[in-house]
Length: 104
Image (cartoon, rainbow, N blue to C red; front, side):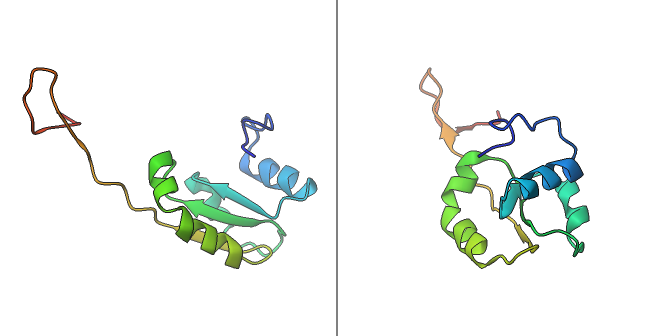
């Protein structure tokens, strides 16, 4: 479930954690670097998995590693995963010029 699906988009991080904990979630997966402030806190039961990106294709490409990490995270744990970016694809110009990268 996503924060958007639960209408939690406007909740501050602490309130988001409290609400997720209240509803019985085991883990919160986030790309919000502000959640790193909760890394050393021992007063929470919900685990946090921090991903360094919200780029969906990169996350999907590394889902096996992410799922293994989720399986091993303990109650109240905090894990970080640095998801490597996918290689940039090269585009072909509609005029037949090859070799233009997607940022040109």
